[in-house]
Amino acid sequence: MGMLDGKVAIVTGAGHGIGRGHALELAKHGAKVVVNDLGVSVTGEGEGKDADLTVDLIKERGGEAVANYENVADHEGAGRMVAQAVDAFGQLDVLVNNAGIVRDGAIWNMSESDFDAVLNVHVKGTWSPCHHAARHWRERSKNGETFTGRVINTTSGAGLVGNFGQTNYATAKAGIAGLTQTLSLELHKLGVTVNCVGPAAATRITGTMPGAPEVIEADDVPEGEWNRMDPSVSSPLVAWLASDESQHVTGQIIRAVAENIIWMKGWTDGPTLSNGGKRWDATKLGTQLATDVFGTRAPGLRY
Image (tube, rainbow, N blue to C red; front, side, top):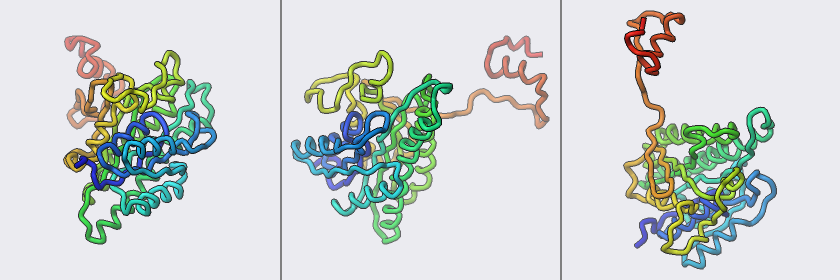
C-alpha cells in the first residue's frame, strides 16, 4: 500500500525540474497524476509538450499519469485542468502549484511587461487553479461527501528574505505565502489543508543566475544516490503534505534546503514600544526605537 493510493493529484510546471520531481514522487507513492506544463522557456516564451516527458517516466515506473498543456495563468484554462483530473480519474485530491518563470533585472532595468508576466504566472497561476479546485471541493462537501484535500504552493528564499534583481519574482513568491495562509482559513472547514514549500535546487530557473550550479533534472540522479541540489529534494516533503497523515498541518511555510527542512515562523511580533495611550512624538521616536527596539544605543542614552 502506498501512502497516496487512491489520491488524484495535479502538479503544475511538472515538465522539468522541481515539478517533475514532485510528480514522480507522488506517483511513486500511488497517486494518479495530471502533469501540467505549458512547455515554455524559463522566461515564459514558446510552448511545447514537455509534460509528455514526465508522463512517460511515470508510466515506465508503473504509475498512472496524463499530460495537460494549459497555461495556469489562463483562468478558464486552469478550470479545464481541474476538470481533466476529474474526468480522467474521478476526483481531485491534491493540487501542487509549482509553475513559474523568471525575468530578472534591477528595478531600473526591469520593464513593466517583465513585472506583469512574472506576477501573472506565479500569483494568478497559483490563485486560478486554487479557485477551481476549491469549487470542486466545496461542491463535494455540499453533496455530503467527507474527504480530505490538499493544496501545496511554492515559494522561495527570494520571496521570504528578498533577492537583488528580482522585485517581480520575490514579490510574487511573497504573495504566494500570503495566499497560502488566507486560503488555509477559507478551506479548513472543508477538510482541505493549504501549505507552502520553499525548495532550493539546481533548476533551469536557478541556472539563469550568475555562478549557479549546473542544471539537474529530477530523474538524472540515480536511485539511492544523493545530490544536495537535486530538484526533487523537497518532493518527499510534498508527498507527506499530500498524504492523510498531514491533516493537522495547514497554513505553514516550510523550506527544504539540501538535508534541512526548515519551518518558517513568518512575520512575528518583536520588541514593542508603548506610549501609554498618548500620541507618538516624531522628534522623540528615533531615540526610543534606537534604545528599546533596535538596540543601537545604550538604554542609559534613552533621553
